[in-house]
Structures are given as C-alpha cells and as structure tokens.
Image (cartoon, helix red, strand yellow):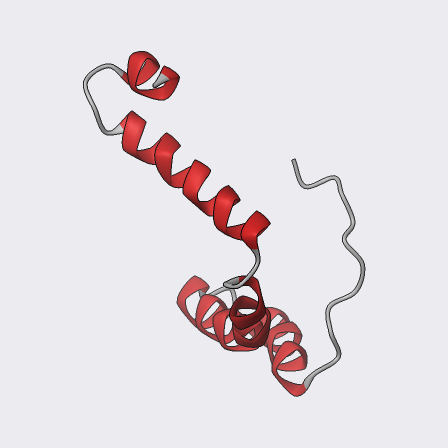
Length: 77
C-alpha cells in the first residue's frame, strides 16, 4: 500500500492550497476539508463512471458484510 505513484496533482489553485496547508498544519479536519474542495471536479466526473460506481458499490458490500454476525458468509453472498 502506498507504493504506487500516480503522477502529479493538478496545478489548480485549490490543489496548491492543499499542498500549502500540508506545510502549515497537521490538522486532519482542515486538510480533509481543503482536499475535498480541491477534488470536487474530479468527483463530479467520477460519478458518471461505471467503473468507479462498481468499485464503490463493492467496497460498500464489504462494509455491510463486516457489520453482520457472520462476516465470511455475508461476504461470500
């Protein structure tokens, strides 16, 4: 995990704010808030992508399975 390089962040004003904030603070709330603002355009594009939708749905199924009494059986279903 974390060993893949996905390239550079876009050089938009909002992403530059994220980088600047990382230099200034370690407050996860502030960093998460600015990151979500910067990622908004990509998230808007992703919501119409079938691959992204299937991936999110699969991850949600794993969480739903983990919330039950028999994780293994729920996950197999």
